[in-house]
Image (cartoon, rainbow, N blue to C red):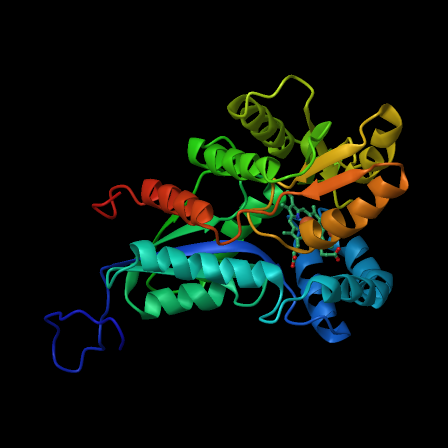
Length: 345
Ligand SMILES: C=CC1=C(C)c2cc3[nH]c(cc4nc(cc5[nH]c(cc1n2)c(C)c5CCC(=O)O)C(CCC(=O)O)=C4C)c(C)c3C=C
Ligand SMILES: [Fe+2]
Ligand SMILES: [Fe+2]
């Protein structure tokens, strides 16, 4: 068995491996392809998660498996086609690159670094399995969402615990804090925005910080996501010395008929030019990697909305992706979470 360490076991005792630590980076997930079947499989898994849709499944599943999964896969597939990369979905490409580069930085015989997707492939269960097989008796999971939400962060950890439920010999498990206000995250985000602004041939009237939304009812029930988003915006504005009001916080990607967190990004983009904001820079601080929501919704649809409403300049700051900044950030977060497990932490 790979990664076995010698143990004094009686004859015939199965091989025992152990003593290693695993780090698992987990992002949301993405379809395997842009075709109808792949899209349907992915959306069905995602939208069946009760952390994401809290409606009673007896009510929700007929709606999901009927009208939604009849029409949405083609619509979403067409959007994914516009941003698909040679090696697959951008979210997969960047998350894989982050894990590889982090492994090159901090990985060793004793410290394995890998990645998984909460929905789709590679699954959390398959990677927990791999790490345990390779001898990890401790696993630290980092959900790659700066701002905590039950819909995302808690779902990743739930599904990790679900994978452990099936093991006779479970590894010790650590989950990580949200990092919306972590100095290393604010530094990475602020410096990437500063570099972007320095490279522009115009000075923006405002910077729009657009976060993925959640239903307002989840916030009313106590999800801290909204507060985490507001704090990220405030800390970035302070780090860059911006005047009050220069950075705005909005929420994108509404799904379904209920109210979501406001102000909405699309409505804001359509309203700003009339208020005299014609030059705009947009940042997506809820995503550490570019994905459908940043590359299509913000960089394509958002641009059209803003320019058609009378905007003159529109520029989007790329996510941290697999830049040195991103790997520095991940290294800091992971080493902090590993304290006591790994000496270098
Ligand atoms: C009720 C539905 C949804 C909630 C709640 C939600 C929360 C949420 N999502 C992200 C991050 C991402 N979402 C992405 C895509 C996406 N999100 C929803 C729905 C909800 N998200 C759907 C249906 C989709 C699929 C695309 C589509 O059909 O429009 C992605 C992109 C994935 C990719 O492959 O590129 C990300 C990332 C956060 C951070 C969040 C709550 C805080
Ligand atoms: Fe989403
Ligand atoms: Fe979207």
